[in-house]
Length: 297
Image 1: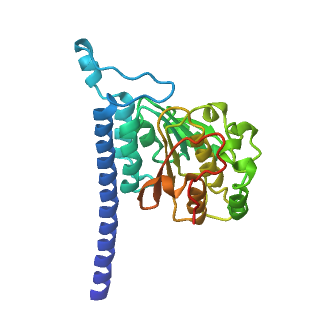
Image 2 (image 1 turned 90 degrees about the vertical axis):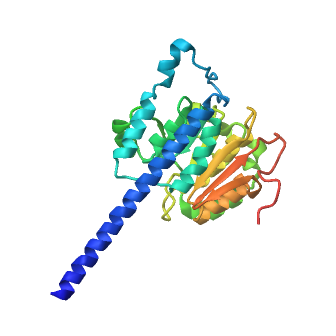
């Protein structure tokens, strides 16, 4: 009996510990979200808009009440994350890396590879800007659309498999994949270029790109080789002032690490946290034959 009681107490202790850990994560995420939201609002008046957006002006006396009101989209996001038991794919520390960039650059153009539990958060942190999501799973898109129809999502097909990563890394150094040959991704002969993306994606100059998809955790998965390469090619052809902030998640895996080093370049790595790397990628002259000025080791 004593052993049984001890086992029951131990089981309850573990259950309580798991509940406490889950609650702690939720509190941290909500706190991080609120901090980023406050930074975004505080810095919004001093930031420049991305392509296609007009800078916001200060409120007049007659508009002060309306301007002080919390936007509906922001309020909905707060309610969603406070009431949900599902936590985003990234840790609070990883989220803060991109959140700080959005607090400085939003409203801007943000492209996200992947549709997940954190999508509403990214769209809200970029409130007033354009946030577009690319997702490989049509059924998952339909599920999210029912809950959050305000999100802009495109279905994308990835023609690769993770097993092809070594060959594609070599191919990425060939002439069809040079930065000077990929200014028009639609016409690219490079097997890493996502030429099937909608014109809205290809023709927009993205200020921030988050790469947290497609799947890359089993051999037959598409892997993130094409997403990383295409993001790098987009950044290199940028004509708007400023660099492109690119975030790659799951860099503990070989494909994410190797392709980030090859095309986003260690020289452009400005921050890292957990399994996330943040690159600030400058535009590149048309005649350039390499993505990186320094040879990656």
